[in-house]
Length: 125
Image 1 (cartoon, rainbow, N blue to C red):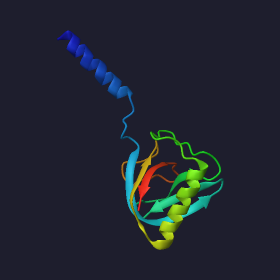
Image 2 (cartoon, one colour; image 1 turned 60 degrees about the vertical axis):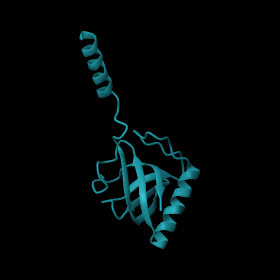
Image 3 (cartoon, rainbow, N blue to C red; image 1 turned 90 degrees about the vertical axis):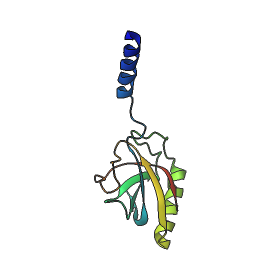
Image 4 (tube, rainbow, N blue to C red; image 1 turned 120 degrees about the vertical axis):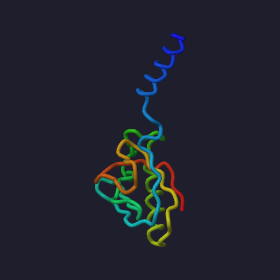
């Protein structure tokens, strides 16, 4: 019994010290309300379901977001993402699922702090 209690305590301590895989991950949706370029090379995005814009990538250098569980965004990927969101804005298309992650991702799409950096893991429209 003592070994089982010790094992349970060890598992609890490891779980407490390990970042939650879902922490900092969020799915937003809506129409593209704002897609913009901000010096130095940062792309900004706001969907209708979001309270403010977020920075999603860089056209000048690899985009590294602390807390992102899914890797960095390359310059070429950023340019493709930017073009896709420009097209969605121009046509009024709805983004059904924009998966974001990183340390600055809040609990809901309506509660982003200003000027945050996020990583785009996946999107579809």
